[in-house]
Length: 179
Ligand SMILES: [Zn+2]
Figure 1 (cartoon, rainbow, N blue to C red):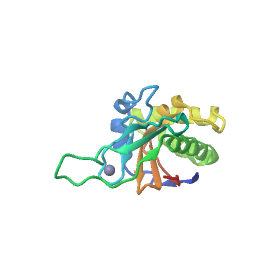
Figure 2: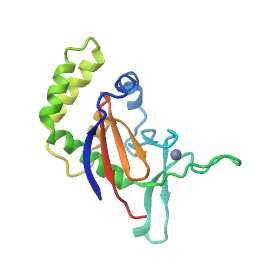
Figure 3: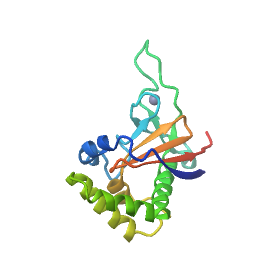
């Protein structure tokens, strides 16, 4: 379902992430870890969680959809596609495993960050190094890891997700889902 994740545009928006990281952490809850953290790549609105019900339990699906899809009368709706909840879970798993596979690169990067004058940079670098050194590759979604690492996920054109970590690192995941 998910292609390889790539390191991307590492340093872009780093300052934004550092400024906003602490507050953003509070948005997510145990039942709804992606609330406020899945962003539409078209106009930057958040995705909202929806349940597609069916009389047959097997066809009940949880999806995320741009909040700008059905706007007030007279406005043009966003035409981005919905995304299945399980795709988001899988992206998080793949992103984390990409970090582990590239551990040497990230440890070097975060070590460099320890010299920063910014206390939040140093704090995040230490926390990220501890996580990456102490955790085995994931086979299932772990909410605590997600909250410790990720600021948001930006969905682009219904086929790519850019995950922004709390230190500003961005990783791209390509995915495919049936509709
Ligand atoms: Zn949108």
